[in-house]
Image 1 (cartoon, one colour):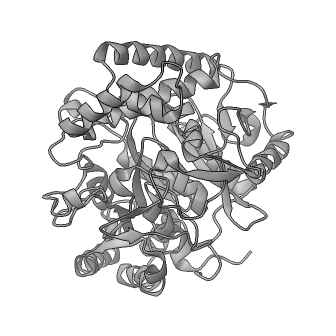
Image 2 (image 1 turned 60 degrees about the horizontal axis):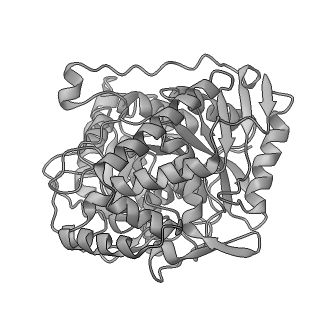
Length: 486
């Protein structure tokens, strides 16, 4: 197979080309900027730039590389970051007009850790309003399109991030994830994404204005075109920050597996809580067939010892409690009044969301206690299994739909319409319980859309799920550029 064009190669490979002087840092930046100039008009992935600053940084990186003194592993490699990560001198709006004038005074910790290793930051990528959709559109920057089909969503909330990677505009990206916001765009756009164990990657510099506390469930993490890049990036991103760094050291255990035959694997392709579209099911099923004779142990039925329905209920309660602090006092009072009128029998997503928005603290404590009991059941489960493979979403990328509220919209699954919010199950089944998971591309559906697999593993086992993705990349499937961009 012919090598990919340079802008589409893994970041670790680009770093080797730079260190061996087979390409210069300014030249590499120019190649990514050419992709940006050629394609961003139709895609609208990169929405904030500082090209002059990037060119100056690339020139400095080139001097270091010529002297054989690279700043770090990614010296000279171009990158972008999700719009909500602070970049000194640039807006961090979270897609909300209310924060249009929120100009960052310093870089987010995650960004600074990558640039400290020499990465060349040139732009920020698009998000949905308040990072709260599996689409990426807002009234400030407009709509981002999927490069595989411009009429479809690239995912969200790190949608612009995945598009920039898929189209060679950028080699490294950082996103955030409370409801699959890293994993969903990776799946929709055919790239890699890793949702770390909660609190492994510092969140400072990714808060809404005026806030200093990391929310429940949410994480920051890497997106890339290769599982090897995820491992290298996580090595830089992981570690306590600020006050916590005074007494906390995070050391993620290295993966002990060197081949697929050392993995104990269980697979789920769908679930009654969130039915999965047949093409996505079939791709994970084909992977399971491939693994059947290649892994140490394979099951299609092994699950942690609690119901998926309960997992979804706990997740929605904690997810919407975590996002409830965005409410104004008036919105909180209005939601209290709405909850008072809900029938006790109403267990719709909308009803669960409203109740979580105004949940008493005692109730939250009880729900969170059950979450941690279930987290221990996951740990028991992973005594017998190394990874659980499952979908990242209920379907491949769906058509743009900006009408009404998210909870009112539907997507097609197996010939009928289902609520878009049903598929939050695939985000929360692991994320609610603080577990890491990696999304890796599997190829294209019959409709020509990317589809991936979510690789879930035990808490702090981040390098195990990434290792499994690395082995799939080597032996099964990997990143493929969308047609017309390479």
